[in-house]
Length: 131
Image (cartoon, rainbow, N blue to C red; front, side, top):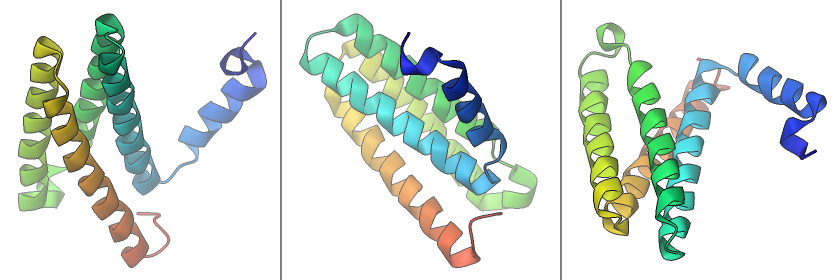
């Protein structure tokens, strides 16, 4: 039995998400997308196209979840701009998946990394990251 299948580990993982602040949840989404992009790059390096496909799809799903988290009424122009960026990232991930090239993955990784860093910094400036 792997660690991920042990009941205690599963309870810990569930609790980690249920008790995280909204700010922390967004950071976790960014981390998940970046992890899957990195795995997709490694899979492409190893010529494991099916694995790359799986990880790119996971990254796409996470970016779509980030998009779903946007509140355009409260976020106004910033939320609308982020939505456009997320659409662009999903498109780039789609192109990376179709052509199995790392160029688009590297671009998405850079943009998501910058967004993650900005979000993290914003949380530190606002306070304890509990917003």
